[in-house]
Length: 315
Image (tube, rainbow, N blue to C red):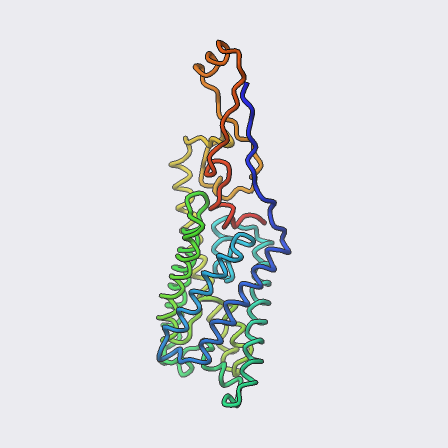
């Protein structure tokens, strides 16, 4: 007879753990991005800020991605929601956690700025990194240009995230670097045009500690990135349906069911793995009179690291 082998998996993190990871990762990103921006020249030399922020995204995803999925950005959360990879209630909770973590991070930087004697006006220092358009942008980019770049940049960022973390087709060690590098190249453009963060939570945190003009123009840095995220989520959902149609006749060896793209985001990691017996195997078993035990599945079959690491539908 054949002995089924149970797939071994770690318990799913609870919602509180995931929200804590999102808040902590968001705080980390804001502390580095805003801190480096204030003590450098983000408009004239965007590389340090862009590189620091992108590397921080990579580090945060590596550190906390296995807990929460590594969003740290309301735009990415919305993209995951529209793509069907996270529940609506969890998405709203993620957004709240990201905002709280980002504001705490900005507050910590604000406190540090107040302790620097040469920076006599902390709000003026935050004005240097606050997103803006028109007269408040380094290149005096008009609202239409900022709107277009925020939409396009956020759509590309969300598309990279969704593509790099798409279930069992993803490589968990590579996804954080793909998203982080995408953030680096996008920020190099965004910093020059008007400190565009492609992250509504970070924009909000920076605006809270800047002059009043930053709060007045904050709406743009919510509307534009969420529009881009929605576009990317819809496109990814279309790809998802196309892939599911192509994979409809492929059977999952773990579950015995069709391996459509929705299986990439399931949360049942405790299914029995039982390789089907063939007629020849049964004949050999009968003739030898010995019991055979199926070998342990390979790590790829027993556990799906890519899905487990960045499974956005754990909620």
